[in-house]
Figure 1 (cartoon, helix red, strand yellow):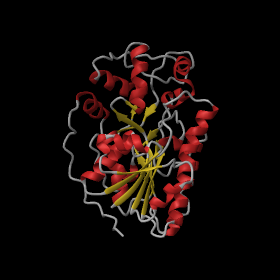
Figure 2 (cartoon, rainbow, N blue to C red):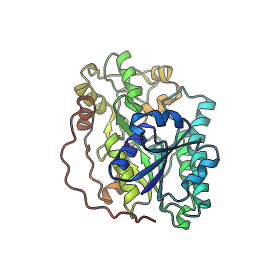
Figure 3 (tube, rainbow, N blue to C red):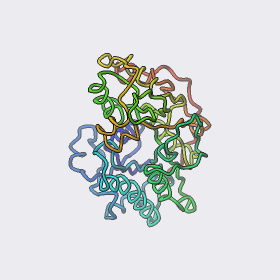
Figure 4 (cartoon, rainbow, N blue to C red):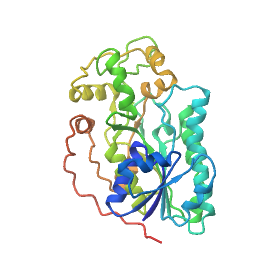
Length: 336
C-alpha cells in the first residue's frame, strides 16, 4: 500500500512509518523540513515531499494515486506557553491541514480509499464526574473541544465519495521523554520533588489528583492507527485510549514505582501554582475525563499495554510487552 502521511516525523508518525516499512508498505511523508527528515538515518529510502499541509500547494498532487492517507499533523500542545497566537497555531495546524487534505482527496483522479484522521479525547471536554465516555458521547465546549470538533468536521463529505474515514481520538500518549511524560517529568522533579498528583479542582488547596487520566502507550496508539488503516469496518470516531483509565494520583504512584528518581508525594502543587509554571495548558494536565475504547475493543484490537503500571515499566525499564492473545485477523483494505 502506498500511504501518504502528514506528521510523519512526530513521535507517533515515526513509529507508524517504521511499521509500514517493516510490513512492505510504501510511506510518502509530507514535511515542512523535508531536508532534515531525509537526513534522518531512520528515514533512508523513504519518499519525503517538501510542503506545509496547513497551506495549499503542489504537495497536494502527491495524494493522487496513493492508496491511503494518515493525517497526524498538529502543533504540539506542550511546545509553547499558550497565548492567542499559539492557540491559533494549535487550531490552524489541525483544521486547515485537514481541510487541505480533504480538498486534495476530492480533486484526485485516483483518490485514496481511506483517510485515517487524527483527533483527540479533548473532544469530550473535561469531566469532573465518573461518567464513562465512549465514541457516542457528546462534545465539550472548552477551547480544545471546539478545536477537535472543527478538526473532525473538516473531513465531512468524504465518505460520500467512497473514502473510509476512521478518526482516532487520541488520549494522553505515554512515550519516553516525549509528549505528556516529557512535560510532566520536569514538573515532578522541581515541585514538590517527586511524582505527585496534579489537579484538585481547588486553586490554592494541594492537588489530590482525583481527575481521570485516559492514557495509552505509544505502541498501542500506533497499533490502533494501523488497525484503522487495514480494517474495512473501522470508520468514524475511535477512542485511542487504553481500556483501563486511572485517576491521576494512581498514575503518579505507578510512575514513582518505576522512575526511581521520582519518589511518590501524596499531595501536589495547587492548580494556581501549576498554572504559573505551565500557563493555560495546565488545564489539560489538571482536568480529565474517563474515556473508554469501546469501538477499538469491538473491532478486536488487543492492547499490548492495558494496565498503566506495565506501560510505564516498559518505558522506564525497556521491558517487552506481556504476551497478548492473538488478535482476530483484520480484513485488509484492497489495493488499487
